[in-house]
Structure formats: C-alpha cells, structure tokens
Amino acid sequence: MNKKHLVLYLFVAFSLSSCLSKKKMIYLQGQQTQSSNEVNYEPQIQNDDILSITIMSSDPEIAAPFNIDQIQGANTAGGGGNNLFKTTYLVDARGEIEMPVLGRFPVAGYTKTYLKQYLKERLAIYIQNPIINIRIANFKVSILGEVKSPGTFRFEGDRVTLLEAIAEAGDLTLYGKRQNILIIRDYLGTKTYNRVDITQADFVNSPFYYLDQNDMIYVEPRKAKIDSTAIGGNVSAIISIIGFLITTSLILTR
Image (cartoon, rainbow, N blue to C red; front, side, top):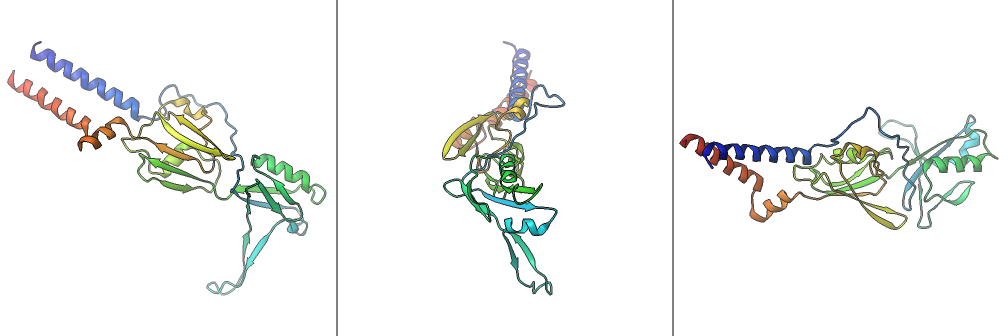
C-alpha cells in the first residue's frame, strides 16, 4: 500500500467517524413534517399530588362555600392590606380529597378534564354554569446522569415535554446517550421503565414526549465516557491526534 492510498484511507475513516458522531448527537433527525399527529395529552392525578381547585360563579357568594381561602392579616411592610391564599388539596393514600360541602371523593386516576366534569355534575344543584380551574401544584420531574445540571425541577404547568425538562437541566452533555434515555414512571404504585430516542423526528409522537409528574429521567453515558474514565483521557481525541500526526508525517516525508 503506497502513501497516497494510506492517506486516503485515513481521510475516509475520519469522515465516516464524523458522520457517525453527528447521527448520535443531533436531535429529531429524519423526516420532519409541518405538523405531527395531534397528541391531546393530560397527566392523570396520582396519590400525593397537590391540587389547586378554584370554583367560580357569576355570583361570588354562591361559590364562596366551595372554596377554602385563608386571609393573612395586615401587611406591615406594605402599610396594610390583606393577602388571599388559596388552600390546596392533598390527594391522600387512598387517592381521595375532601372539599367543603362536597365532602370526600376519589380523584386518583382522573385527568383534570374528567375531574372538572365530575365537579360540574356534583355542583349542578348548587351553582349554575360554574367555572372550575384545576392545577397540579406540585408537578415535578427529576433528571439524572449526563446532563449539565442534574436535579429535581418544578413546573408551573402540567403539560411538560421531555425536551423542556432536558432544557431545564441545561441540555445533555456531549457524553449523554441520546438514543436510549430512560424514563421511570410510577403510576398508582406501579413502576414502568421506558426508553426513548430523541434523535428521531417521530419522537414527538411518542407517548413519552409529554411527562407525568414525578417522572424520573436518566441519561446514561456513551461508551466514550466510560472508556475515558477507565484510562483517564478522551479515547476519541487521542485517536484523532494520532491519526493527524500520522497523516502529517506521511505528507512531509513523501
């Protein structure tokens, strides 16, 4: 094999290595259409969720008995005034909450839409056309592994995507395995282990594109990170440097 052929083979090898690296790193590859399949996702209410429920009516006095409000006394720093705080409802171990007038009833396993309809039916004898707002007040997910800032993250809303959660954690590191992200989901005491590939465009249609409250996300390291930890350096970088030195040597000595 002459020097020219050797240089050519080295160039092709590095090019292939570069292409493979891009496929492992870039998100949402493949055919991307203007719109994806519509996903009307709502998380289901679980034990230990904290629900903020507000019931309103055209006549505030009629709705008042169904809302537990706490009024904090005079605001000394502001020179007076009262602050109104909405009391939330903790879903207990039996999957139930207890509301004024309505009493105790189950909510675990319901979506917000279903619970809203259920409350409207229960309230029909008291209020005509009530306005009901429901929010999961403690929606949170935890992210571990190869992200820049692992931890537990809380969200104001409850329609959170995996990509949004990853963004909150500062994105994946270069060593994060994007093709095999693990989502551990606990629903009413049953844990499931689910793996997703965020390098594929059709990931947005996955049932795990939207997260549930208390989801645990683990991003495992690529082999390069494990190898570099074992030998104390970056294997890919070392190979690249050696290849560059060999190529340069061949060019200069031909």
